[in-house]
Image (cartoon, rainbow, N blue to C red; front, side, top):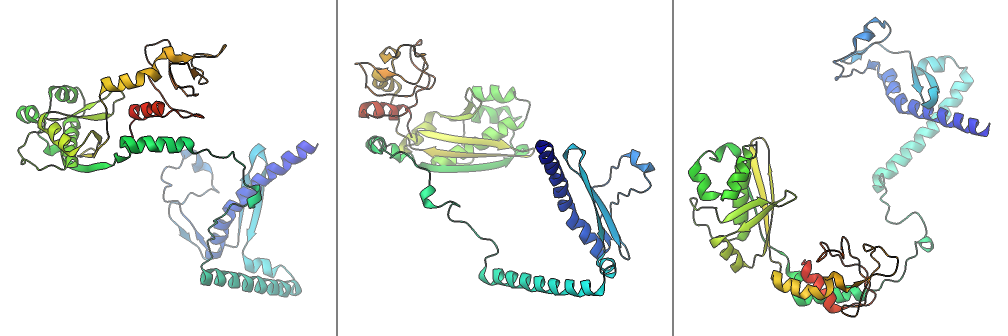
Length: 371
């Protein structure tokens, strides 16, 4: 019975909430005498044509006054409620004079209190109170373990020594152009400005914007390098924009463009391409990130990343992150995300928690994941 009583109260509460949501609009209609119309009401179902007491106006109707209105709301479980709203003169005319005078005094007191509160909020600018502290006292703050910043300091020293903190952008470039203004049908234009791989990719795409969006991408890359222009007729073939395996555009520099980028210290260019039905737009960012050669990188990482240096505790799965290095490598727990001891080398290496920091090991990680 208690459950049934609780369920009944919950269902009635949902009906009351629905009434509260619709009641202000209906009260406004009674006071103004205007029945609001639904401007989107242009597709009423034909089944309602036979309902003589239902009206779906698309325009507001101005009446000479509305005496009463009724509204119904249905909660969950087929529990509903109905409210009857009367115009104030009919309500006051139905009560005795003594009750009406008592109501006037209470109404005047409430009006004065409301006016005072509203005036204070406007004068003190406290209508919206911004909270700058949590609702619970300081002694109830969540407790946490002391933070050991030794690892952070070690990583910061390596970043400072290797110059990894100097990965700030060198320049940015933005360009846009009408797709119709790019002569993608001209073979001479394509041969001067696009590589064979770019032409093959763009011609395989159904959208004619493929050439246009790469053309503006090349100009955005050129602007990001910050070098002197060789004129409007200069070829853009040395700037190649291809897609990687996931499909993201990547920039490859050749010839003079690569030499100019090397002079500026550019080692990485990020690019974003987009187009609408008529316009193609591109954004490029050139950055200076110290990079080591691939052979040097593998040689430096080999003592740490070779699977033969992993020793797993008994019963652990090879992919279990709880692992240690043997005597050939640093003795500290690491997290190997996606590492597979069955292959020649892991395909993804992510540093985890290091209770005992080994600086050569962290240096290897920093060089593997620059920036």
